[in-house]
Length: 116
Image (cartoon, rainbow, N blue to C red; front, side, top):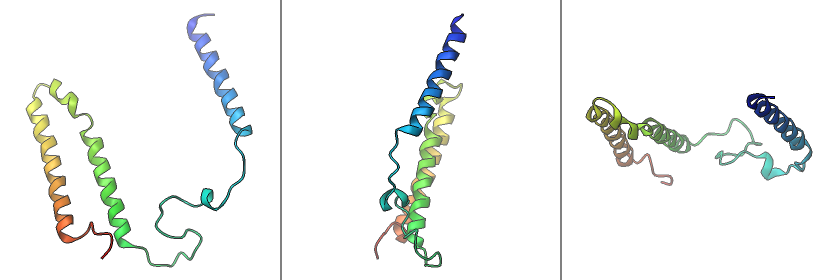
């Protein structure tokens, strides 16, 4: 047998063994903490008609926005290998400046205050 067939056979066998073992090993004893969602901000078992905290929603959106900023700036170290690295750094600086201005605006408006 050649090397590729051997590697595929080992990977398939190992995957099947791990899938079978994963059904036998976990202990099925769910409790309230395991069944409730993490950091949801409200009781998941209560009424769905309760008012939702708009501040919680705003902080969550800001968190996602700045996570997206990190993803957009992740390939920046490879930008110096392009034909015009200054243009790449200019656009990255523009993105950072725009997001910083947005953060300052939210801060001034009081959108980041959790408690009033």
